[in-house]
Length: 211
Image (tube, rainbow, N blue to C red; front, side, top):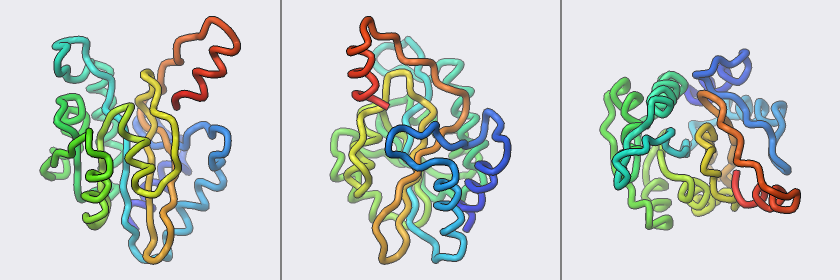
């Protein structure tokens, strides 16, 4: 399986900044050994339906109404293309906002794939549309749409992504006849830390409110 093989290779090596790497496990998440087991277990199975979900890269400050990517965001978009160029992506979906299109553009250009548009406001409808596709699908969304869409696909219910979180990449996979399984990875440059809260209690609340 191309996707599993590509992810496995990227996880096993000392990952460059442009590659995929397992996220630092939050409470209740898979550790690295479990993550690798998750990938290896698919090698002998039938091709699963796979959906890759991530947030757009860092956005520019202007224009305020519909900004594109900042310089850091453009670099991350290239890192995404490098990380997924051999992952067997067959469909690329974004929202109507430019920052999602710009994030997907380098990979779409490399693969020669059209970019389709999802309605970010219609989570259930977007999930149904994704489930109707075959093969490996990349979805570029927003901090407040990635995890709700993951939940609508039968995955875990997770907090929204933090405003400073751009590296998480969720791999949703469903083997024929089985329940979906989700792996959380990271790609590209590391994220900036979330702004420090003024009190310990506020810091605890902030860490529980976003990923």
